[in-house]
View 1 (cartoon, rainbow, N blue to C red):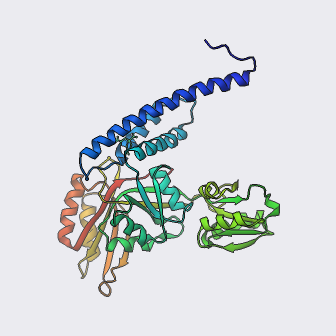
View 2: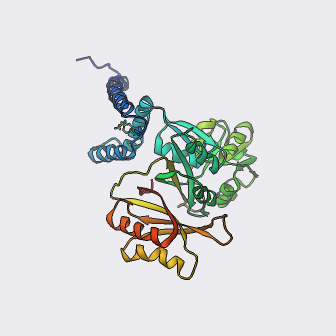
View 3: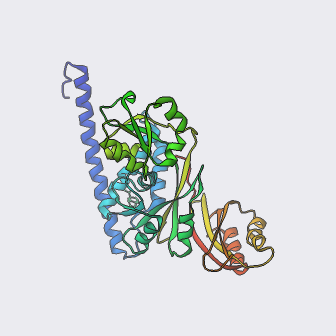
Length: 365
Ligand SMILES: O=C(O)C(=O)C[C@]1(C(=O)O)C=C[C@@H](O)C=C1
């Protein structure tokens, strides 16, 4: 037994140090095992997938169920997600392209899915994210597809028309705007607030109530706004908490958007679809045959089998005048029997049909 020092605080801190040593050595044991998994996957050939989202979900679910506390339940998920991301980086560095710049909500979605140890490849456009994955400069890509207040992201839907990529996951992220300040600044001293026009619009009431003296200045992205605020002695930014971390700003207030429930759905692009989990979604891209009842022919095989259509979106194909492509989100996996039958029937009924992916349905974070 090591004698406890007389100062109780010092004693507790020494006990924490010993636990941290144990944690570190356990993390290294875990990392060595993951590195062995990496060798097995390398030996299996170029088709092997190093990132195993299904396995990660199983690990997280098991640990969340087992945690008896007092360690906070949400932290179990965050910490083990990071541990697996770090272990994976030893197997093979994972390159993730996303709609940048760094610190945007798409970056946050990418970090949520792949952890902080993956290599970030911010891209200027949605098209460039698709290209980075198609040309194997990145293993995965993350793009926004739908915002609760702004609706569908057309450039993402359009990019699928000419891409061989598959959707392998979806991420649902609450879009919580924060007010970021230089560390030494008080709210009363702020003269300029920078942000993307949409973010300024989302926080109009809060800004009027708390920063009536400050000018609103539009920036091309919330991340760029954070960078500008960092350089302005009297500046603040409306951006994500991740942007505060990246640009050395403090978070003066969180969730300042006028509508509390603001969320965006993102898609993860990859070379292969995901395995069934029992709680999946399938996205189809279908060109209906021209003629009366075209849309009905598309929907009827789904309805007859009780398959739930959660979203339908149409976009002009830009190949032929008045030709439309339909994007359908259906609950279930393409490998499930009723879905497989419906898809076979639809193939015959459509001018063309492509399964963009079956992937696990995201729960709200
Ligand atoms: O089990 C695997 O396939 C691993 O590669 C190990 C591990 C982990 O750290 O637990 C790492 C990355 C994968 O995405 C899933 C799990």
